[in-house]
Length: 104
Image 1 (cartoon, rainbow, N blue to C red):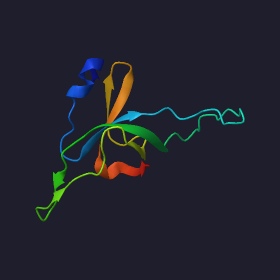
Image 2: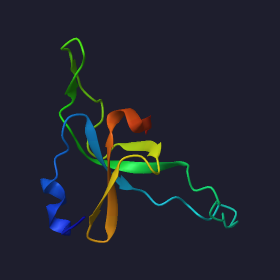
Image 3: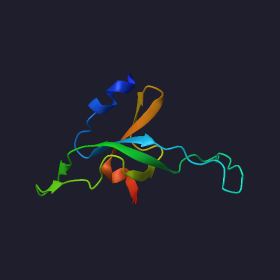
Image 4: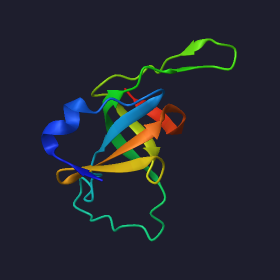
């Protein structure tokens, strides 16, 4: 699915979903050593939060909200969620439970 870049602000994730923008990892260390791509590309990646859903209702009827907001940086699995191509960037829409950590 490809959308135009000006539509990014119109995407509002539903339930406990989060829209993430990938952040390119450094491929060169501070000392100048080039880090090659790993043959096993299934690894956690760093993303920037673009939009957050309202949350969901738990089994007991309690409201479950996420503690994320726009511009937070998070770690999530590279292959979790669904890809949405907007312009030249492939964003991810993932459930909150697939976010491993928040970077403070």
